[in-house]
Length: 134
Image 1: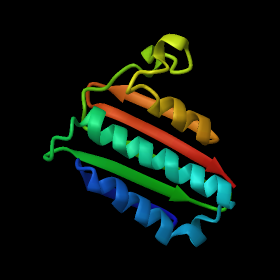
Image 2 (image 1 turned 30 degrees about the vertical axis):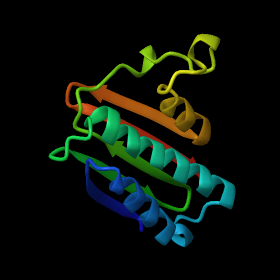
Image 3 (image 1 turned 180 degrees about the horizontal axis):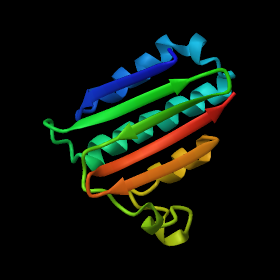
Image 4 (image 1 turned 60 degrees about the vertical axis):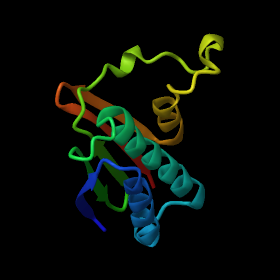
């Protein structure tokens, strides 16, 4: 798996489908075990956010996933068809007033697990780009 362009429906089953794809290609991805687990968690959180928060679980909407894998890094892009949001306005989930909120930790978790994080968001959707260095 050097490069894949994938399209998933906006349902929670897609999370497991993408997780299974990563497991199937684990040897090719060639990350140390801890980094691979972190990648799995980050990707699962990103696609779940795209389905639930971006696409509002509207089944007609899709989530687009691009995977680029080489000897130095793996980069995975996950893009929804939502309305977009400003990642800089997300409340800090580690502040005391946010500790018990049900939502608002996904981006924080993803950032903490990956080597490089980027978020591009506009009125056509949000794209989360995560990279793990080898």
